[in-house]
Length: 177
Image (cartoon, rainbow, N blue to C red; front, side):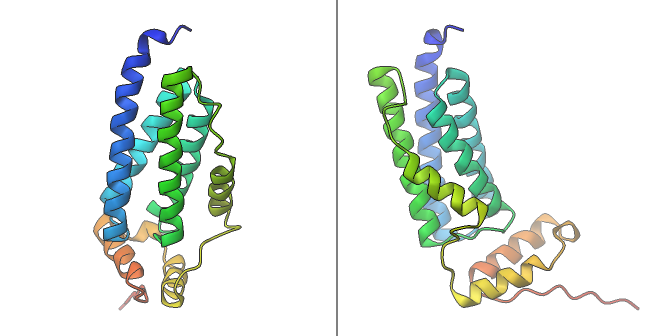
């Protein structure tokens, strides 16, 4: 398939999504775990992954796919916003921007080495190298893990995630008469 006629559109859309991802990451640093920001961030990464894959830019598609995996864990409160996680996500955005620049210059994204960050993302997602959390946040996360997410609505989930980010313990109290 000849994708050259779509290249200009790919560049414009990619720039917009990379900008949105960067802005969302900055907002996420401030808010801790705003579900609306996480959802917007996930959608931009997902769209960028699809566009890169359709254009044949496998490195870019692979990087955004791994970012998606981490963001999905963050959306489900299985991975938390920490300095280490945010640093890694910002590094990934820098690499994606470099890949886009290289695509513009050489028509390929293969000249940008992203293996180090990809390995870190994969380890993060698999749980092998979860960044250190504050003890209170870790305890709150354990309490949250014992709560069935299906029993909570969107508002309760958001409040619970914010409490966890502040290091508060979360409990589900069920009263039956």
